[in-house]
Image (cartoon, rainbow, N blue to C red; front, side):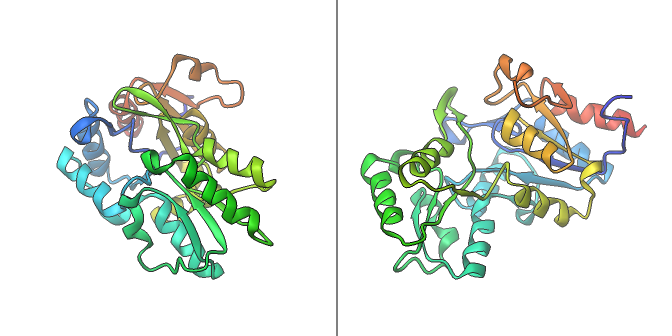
Length: 267
C-alpha cells in the first residue's frame, strides 16, 4: 500500500509559495500545473486549506495576488500566521512591539501596540535592520517576563530564484541574546495546523500536507498525525530527500503530480 491508498485522503493542506507559485518580480508566476491541480481538488469535493508562513503582506493582499495569478480560493481558506497571532494577543491581553513588514501591519489594525509587553517578529525583510532587531532585543531584555512570538521558524525561503534568510534565523538570535524560548505561531506549530484541520472538519489521519519545506511543512504535519508530501519545487534541494530528521511520506515533482496520484487513489 502507498500513502495514497493506505487511508483515504479527505483533506488537503497546501503551502503557497514554492508549491502554488514561485515568487519573483511582478508578483511571481504560477508553477506549471498548479492552477488546474487546485481546481481538480475542488472538483473532487476534497476540502483544501492553504497554510502559509507568509507575513510580508496582509491576507487580503496575498489572496488578491493569487487570484491575479489565476488561482481560485476563498480568503477564509487561507491560513497565514498574523490572524492567528492577533487572536492570541487579544486572548492573553498582550500588546506587541512588532518587527514585521510594514505591508502586513494592516492585519494588526485591531491590536493595541502601545506600551508593549511582548515582541512579535516576522518576515520584515528589508526592514529587518540591525537597529530594528536591536530595538526588539532591548524591548525584550527590559521586560520582567519577556515574551517573544515568531511568525514561523523557517531557516530560509526562495525569492526571485535565490535563497534568502527566513524569520527563524532572527528568532534564534533573540532567543540566544535574551535566554528565552520563542512561541511559534505558524508552521510547524501543531496549534496552527490543527486550526486548519478543525476548519475543514477532517481528521489528521485522512489529511495530507503538501509543501516545499521538509521540516516545517512535512515534519510539522507528520507531528500532527498527517501525511507529509515534499514537492521538488520552490526552495526544495536534493539533499532534502535524505534529511536526517524528517522522512517524507512521499516526494513528487510538483503539486500537479501529487493531485494526479490523489485522483487515481479515488478511482
